[in-house]
Amino acid sequence: NAIRGVLGPLLKGAGYTIVDPGPYEDGTNDYTAQIQKFIQQDCQIFNTFPIPPDFATFWRQAAQQGYTKHVKIGQIAKTGLFPSQVTALGSIGNGLASGVYWAPTWPYKSSLTGMTSKEIGDGYESASGKQWNQQLGASLSLFDVAAAVLSASGAPKDKTMVRDAMKTLKVETPVGNLDWSKPASLAGAAVPNVVSTPIIGGQWKSGASKWPIDFVICENAADANVPVASQLKPYSAG
Image (cartoon, rainbow, N blue to C red; front, side, top):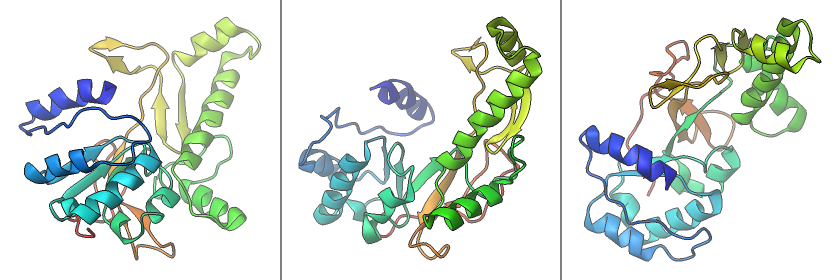
């Protein structure tokens, strides 16, 4: 509902027609009503923010009922944060679009460890035998920030000093160069001690790497330093 209240008006203002079948209960097993509404309205852009098991159920039913044939862009969030969630869909996961807050192709490194984004991804895959995921860079960035602000405060055990040091902190992290002297804003008002990080768009594609499916960066409007690897392609797996 929070997404509906904020994103809906923005999309309408940009000229999109919104087809909203309304909220549903987590754990729903039958999405026929929603799917048929999308088919009737020929919804070619599908944008959703479900928990992973709900999307898996919905998308399989959408493929069975023929809705995915209508879809040109299938945009997912919340689900799809980890490769396993998309791999589990099989062929109908190929071509789904999403956004990431970090990937191994990011041109930034950890100020705490000195590791580049590529080294973080490669190191994880080598040590675990598992595919990289975007939380790796985000989690390490928290430690970068913590170490930097404690050092900058000059008195790590003094809460006030740490708080004040955060207001002017500048630090490189895997997710980008963060600058707390330029705080994030909400509804036009600055939010003290908060920095927003970019979300970069891309697409899950099979054959892009040694893994069954991998995330490929397709745009970098939020951070031009992040390299673009491919253009967004119409969804066609359904």
